[in-house]
Image 1 (spheres, helix red, strand yellow):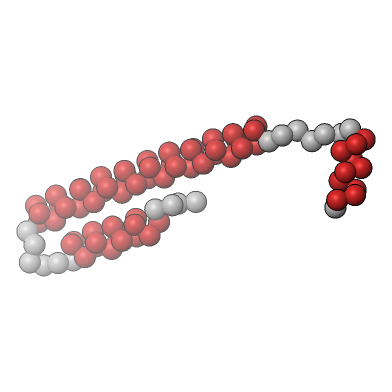
Image 2 (tube, one colour):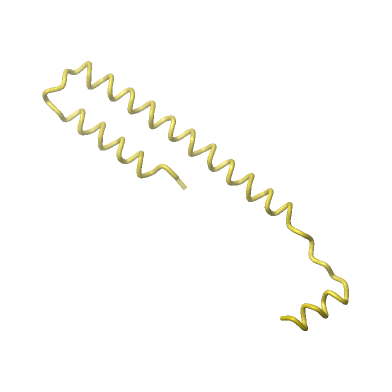
Length: 82
């Protein structure tokens, strides 16, 4: 899942608009396009780190889960209350 898909699409459309504008010099277009590519690369790396941190949080939640009790008293409580 790409968490920054909308931002990436906006950057792509900005880059295309800059490239299709006739009254901007070629070196200015190249400079702005390279900066947009840097921002997109940064978004991709942040997306990867965000995915990794979410996976770590999910793993931590699973490991912190209380083990189920199998005692007869707990089974009777569950039957009675649920």
